[in-house]
Amino acid sequence: MDFKTDKTMVALALIVVAFVTAQAVFFLVRAIRRGKELGIDKATIKSTMVSSGLFTIAPAIGIVATVLTLSAGLGYVLPWIRLTVIGNISYEVTAATNAVEASGLMGGISNPITDPEVFGTVTWVMTLGSIMPLILIPIMLKKVQKGIGKATSKDSKWSSVMSAAAFIGLIAAFVARAIAGSGKPDINGDGAGVLSLAALLFSVVLMLILQKIATVKNWKWLDSFAMPFSMIGAMALVMLLTQVLPSDIAFLEWRG
Image (cartoon, rainbow, N blue to C red; front, top):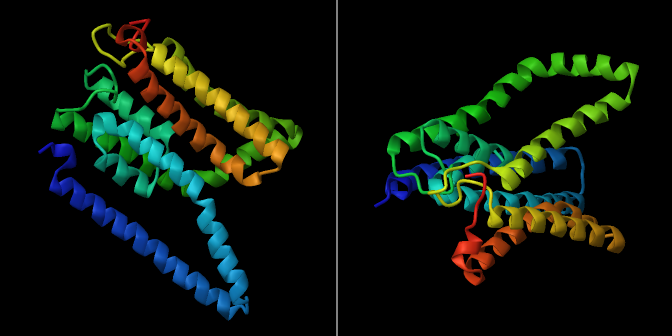
C-alpha cells in the first residue's frame, strides 16, 4: 500500500477531523446557551446558524479544489489533514512545490512523491509555515497595526494601496508560473504549457462572467462562490482538454 494513504495516515486524518469537529460543536453549544442567556429568541439563533452554515459552503468548495490539486503528488490524506485545520491553496501549493524542488525533485507536486523523506519534508514545511502566523499575529499584530496606522494617518489611500499591492503580488506569482514557468523537458507538468495557460485564461474569464451575473442579477451569494466555481471549472476544462486534444498538443510545454 502507498505510504501516503496507508492506515496510519488515514487514522491520523480521522483523529484530526474528530478533534476539529468536536471543537466546533463545543463552541456551537456554548454559543447557543449564551444566546439563550442573553434573551435572544430561538428563531434568531436558528437563522444565524443556518446563514453561518451556508456561508461556509463557498470556502469548503475551494478547500476541496485545493485537496484535489495537492493529491496528485501528496495523495489525498495529507492535504485533507492540513486543510481540516488551517491553510489555503495559495500557501499550500507554494509551500509543497518549494519543498519538493528544494529536495531536488523537479516537477513540484504534479508528479507522485515516492520518497518518504521528501514527503516528510513537505509535511513539515506546510505545517510549520501555517503555525507561524498563529504565533506571530498575537505578538506582532499591534506593532504592525500601529505602523500601518502611522502610514495611513497621513494619507488614507495608503491602506488600500498596500493591501492591493500585496494581493496583486501574490496573484502575479501564480500568473507568471502559468505563463512562463520553467522546468525540465522530460517531466510533464513541470513547466508552463497549453494546459496551465488554458486553466489560467478559463478561470479568469469564468470569474469575470460570474461576477457580472452576480452584479446584473443582484445575486450577492454568487460573489462568495465565484472563485471556487472558477477554480473547479478550470480544473474540469483541463481534464477535458487532456481527453480531446492530441497528447503532443495537450502536454506541450515551453521554457523547459
